[in-house]
Amino acid sequence: MLIVQKYGGTSMGSTERIQNVAKRVSKNAEGNKLVVVVSAMSGVTDEILGYSKAFSPVPNERDLDMALSSGEQISAALLSIALNAMGHKSIAFNGRQAGIITDSNHTKARIKDINTANIKQHLQDGYIVVVTGFQGLSEKGEITTLGRGGSDLSAVALAGALHADLCEIYSDVDGIYTTDPRIEEKAKKIERISYDEMLELASMGAKVLLNRSVELAKKWNVPLYAKSSFSDDQGTLITTEENIMEKPIVSGIALDKNQARVSLIGIKNKPGIAAELFGKLANANVNVDMIVQTIGRDSKTNLDFTVPKNELDKAKLTLEAFKANADLIDYDHEVAIVSIVGVGMKSHSGVAAKAFEAMANDNINIRMISTSEIKISMLIDLKYAELSVRTLHAAYELDK
Ligand code: ASP
Ligand code: MG
Image 1 (cartoon, rainbow, N blue to C red):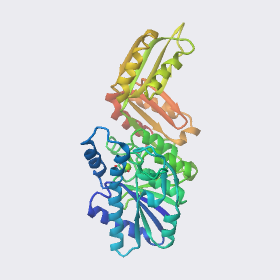
Image 2: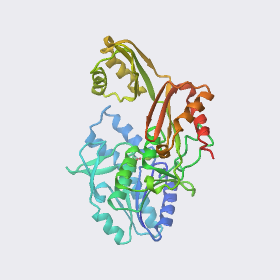
Image 3: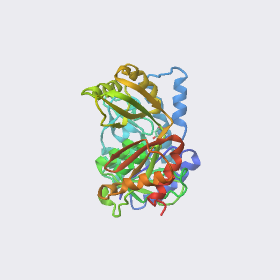
Image 4: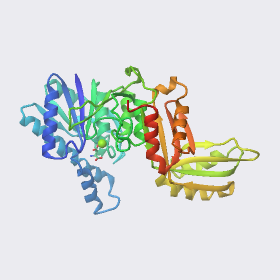
């Protein structure tokens, strides 16, 4: 098999830990071709960022990328040194040597192409190829980085370009759970989950994998396996829906405490109002989610939506200019969004009713509801956030 493995910063956090990674790689090297993508040792990227900011709050990005990319160069080289010392044939590549071509958007570059010739040749020659995550080379020949957490992207993109059989993401988290185990200790590790479900759970804060990397994996059909580098426990396979035999109706419960509610009460009910309102918010770069408008009576209606908490001030400023169009504009940041996610919902009825009943039994008032094919989201008061997660987790028997 051709496997791409990615080890995160915590897994690479010290020489002892790199030694531990080397042992793991060594075990997997038998009978397989291996490409190993690594993050910088934990804390190093932040440290470099800190040094750079000693000179300017906004360091020039071309040079910043040159500094930031060094963290991964060190960790990749160290791992390869360790592997060679163990008697393996191993070689470390930086972004340029690995053939990773990006656009010129420094500090948030996108991978455009990967020239795999060098990697393929070395795999052919029996090498374990260790590659720096998080970086590439722009078409202008400059070093670029892919944005924070970007090593996941490097791994998935390499797996796609090399047509790898599997992309394993090693971190200090041992897989994807039915919900946050810190909120519900009965949360269970999920064996297999579809890309789409993972995307919904991740955007809601299950911080195991960068969302963009899951999108990329879906696009290129790369099976992802999320696993701990600190134990031998099974992880979670993220794959196509077709590869999941038993589809549970609900796979997981996500909680998002970073949203605030905006309500426009008694807003004029006429064509163009929503376009104007959301146009203004879009121009101000405010991310709007969960829009609910009621039918309204006569010439007026109500419109509710959510925005990220840290964009609420921006939203307020924008809405100030819109005041004349509504009787009242009301804001609430003491809210949370709890969501149930599952591809099995598509073919089952009564899924939503069960959620509402469970919430009612615990006296949790639902303020807004929105649904998609595989997700039902409810806006509730912040004080009920954790309780609602446990309530829904139990209602769908996710602990079983
Ligand atoms: N070292 C980079 C960061 O800290 C990239 C990564 O770890 O994925 O964001
Ligand atoms: Mg990460």
